[in-house]
Image (tube, rainbow, N blue to C red; front, side, top):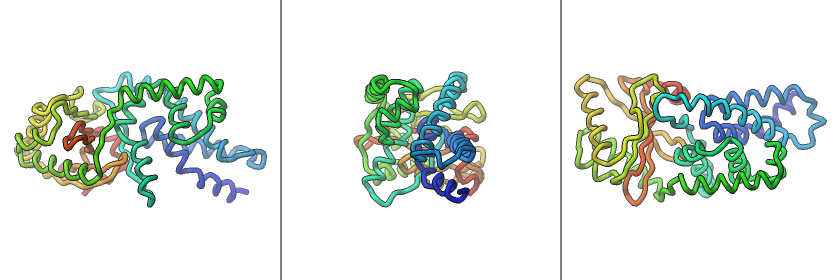
Length: 294
């Protein structure tokens, strides 16, 4: 029974990790939730469970919901801008499935989800992303079917209002990011400005542990000057910069290493041939699941 119990859990692990990560926006926290779910799974008589998958999703979702409520309190005290912890991609062989997966872990969506109440977030994710029925969601949340429908409807409305819909291709995305980092390293201010949308936004998350912008920086000229300044300082201080391409949160990103040590995970949102948003994760705690050294 022990081997069968473990097999059942492993067959559902990917789904559980997906739910926990999208609920929290934290990879480390998500893995802790999945581990706690496994420990609870080991404590029950599996033979009495009608649907192991439903049981696992229910327990995992409830734990994630409790963790999210605690996380929201911590984020109110967070130093600077909060960004989700980078999630390295697990590629799917079906391009259509991959596109859907990419969209549900994008930084833009995860930031929009932060504006929802925990119950709204859970109802939206469980129904729209993981295809649970509202009867199943009602059981998880301890609410009525009608209430859960209302929660999901409100969530969709908020997401439409606060989540920009960026239209691009993976090739255009990577080309623009390559051009941007090249111009930044060369100090080409005018070139940087042409790559950026006029109202571009730069989000930088240091978590109060390392240097980062205290708030969102807006405008092509300001963002371009900021990056020219940063890479100019690298040169003046003889800091060796190396980069490594890595897909995370559904699109190509760059890991930036300072003297061989991972310092920043950078990715962008692209629309109409320009960079509309840049996300720079510098909080060391959020980089711990990425390659630490070059």
